[in-house]
Length: 521
Image (cartoon, rainbow, N blue to C red; front, side, top):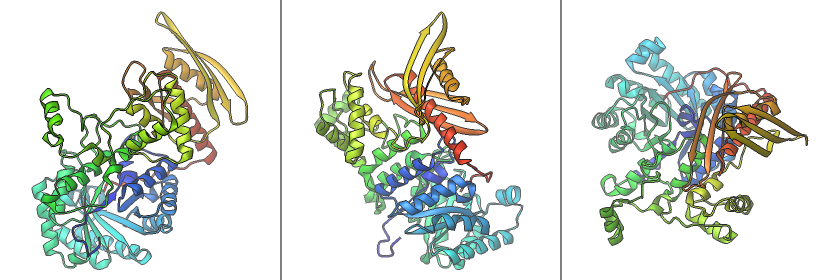
């Protein structure tokens, strides 16, 4: 935080660390890099890229982000021990602006049941961790895990000690979503008034949503003096999630008259960034999600529609374009040209290079031959189609499925291998998807256990595109694949091939994900 601008709230995005720890939200290294670049374009101040000690893969992702992404501070998480801190520093030291984020639990519950440490031991470990991290890096953040359930006087002692040791940012997390706004406001007010050296650090807040209060608690902390807020895109995170970045930033913007504060977030990037994360993780955004949900700017009630026709402020406190969303549902078809498509993509909040536009335009023409009309959701799905699909040897050449309600379905696949082989295999199954997947297994020799199968429509109408999200287990590891086409059987087959390719890639790399437990700041 610049001392010249005390009204600026820094946005610390932990989508790639705390968010990724949410079940079903793990990302590949290319996906994390793609997401990090989108966060930089969004204007976040800090990207917490991961927990480097957790695995080789996590270290590599953090290191790649630190090397490739410019603009935001790149932070790596570490426990208060030298091994963790060394690993975090080795990952982020190549960053333009590196940060080491160390944490240690402080509440009586954690001291007794998790750590088995006395108060004096906690303070000593925290101070030693911060001192060592500061010897490596100038920008050090410290988090007393479960701060909201820590005795207030002891919390003050810990915070004071780590500031003296060299911490530059002190984060006060509501790790289990236990606090309420009035209580949390008092915590921050107390610390700001009673901690020696408080004026020399930035106070941060990190809230979880177990009681649905993450955003409200974060705003209360900001009123109490916090000038950094830790949050995630779409509010993803452990258990019920974290405070939602889009909700926090728009609350500060829409109610600037109340808070008198601002952020560096480009609001017009909120919607496309939200959609990108949803596409990468396979987690759909609820229609009624604040700010970025499909219904956020929808009006069906006749009274509401009448008011909107008179003036938008009757039922809207912000405009769709403020968050990068387009109200217009422009219909495109097979006769539409490249320029019209580019313009529509821009209206939806996406920026594509000429190469990317060519890919999308070719896919658009192919889809337009199958559908009478293409809607906003169709265009979004084409744009968000992974540009970093898992590298692997297999691709789908042809799929033929026959299904009869009175007997088993049969599926025949023709696959192309990177070595130029063409492999054909036919199999039967309980239904068309089962038959197609079994045929792919037989053809590739990769037999993965299907754990979860989800299909949803990404657009409207009988010829809507269907997104298939498959989660499989292979050799104790979980893999996820997604695909969008107008044929849900084809989507399922392509998603499964993505998983097969990921498994093949893991085999080649001999990936070692380690066994260090994920952090829960």
